[in-house]
Image (cartoon, rainbow, N blue to C red; front, top):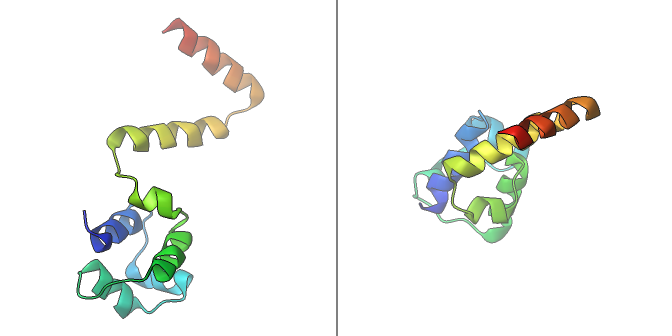
Length: 97
């Protein structure tokens, strides 16, 4: 997957429009659109700014997405919302299965 395609993937995964990403990153919408369409290249500095605006690291950006990783992240997100007692009960349940 090319850099532009990866930006599109992560942007859409986060429910962001190119305009919202551009505003958050402080980079023009037309530049982001051109990078996504592979009409322009991008510097590491600008890519890092875009990644930060999307709430990911460069490591996350270049790590190939997999359905399993997405599920793991979602599970960890939901577990983080549980109370201590709920976490204990979940751990007991998981040991049983």
